Amino acid sequence: MGDADCLFCGIVERRIPAEIVHEDPAVVAFKDIHPQAPTHLLFVPRTHLSGPGQLTGPQASVAQDLLGAATRTAERFGLDRSGYRLVLNQGRDGGQTVGHLHVHLLGGRPLGWPPG
Ligand code: AMP
Ligand code: ZN
Image (spheres, rainbow, N blue to C red):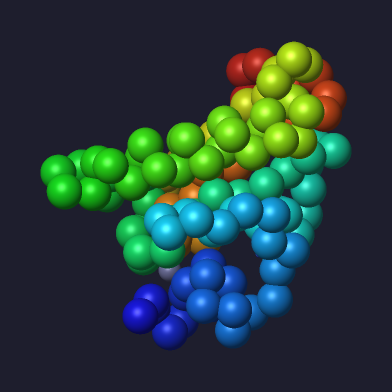
């Protein structure tokens, strides 16, 4: 069971609606509600981890699960030729607003660098 107060645990457990685009035993992916690019998806572990800072020790394999799902889904969305960006935000200065680890997949337009 996830955290009752966590938005993304709510999506994983289907208590909160979302447009789910991928599911596997470790990961759920859904469309970002405020898309910043033509394709903007979020990949979250079914297990509640607060952010990328928790991807250590026994949880390190979760990074592999998330990145594997994100890259395969990018191919499925036809982004592998044009390119795409994966983003993990950690904490206040990183711009993290939801305290459940998530990988952003952004694509479908040229993306500026460096980020703001
Ligand atoms: P971050 O700023 O890295 O924590 O990213 C959180 C992301 O979650 C933002 O891009 C939001 O637009 C997105 N978001 C917030 N609420 C929802 C929701 N209910 N369904 C889908 N995406 C959401
Ligand atoms: Zn959670």
